[in-house]
Image 1 (cartoon, rainbow, N blue to C red):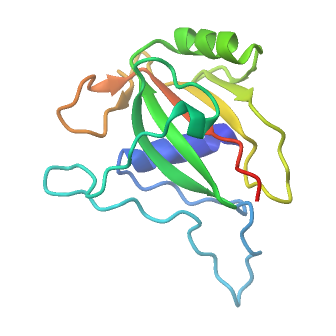
Image 2: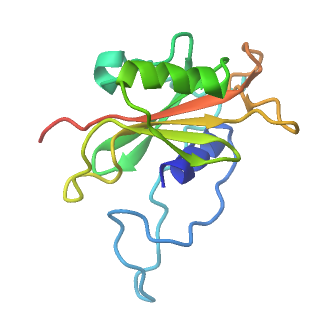
Length: 177
């Protein structure tokens, strides 16, 4: 599920429209003929003439995220996940293997390879509470580099690197309410 959200969020960060979602979203009311579905994620801010967001977000601190961000990773964007949670996306110029190794060491856990191709590795960082959370807190690392792709395009035009081989998605443990 985190991988699906990572792909959707990355597509939004690249300015592409996501494919229609055939499944109900967490926390969304059931679909009925009287109540058509509404998008659960607001559209990203419209780009300015230079192609950059009108209101760039500040990079969250490691303390706000509850986990360290891979050294040198660039903050791309954040998106609402529902129930007060957010997805935070980072692009890393490092290889998938290096980023996964970093999180194995820092989090002191093996994590789980949830997809072989494209390689996607997930680490749990907190317990999922169905009554208060939309998604389990965790770190998901996805390999965007392949024989046919240089990686995820940098959404900041002219910025370096031009493509990120690896994208990191962090869903922090929400603050107690």
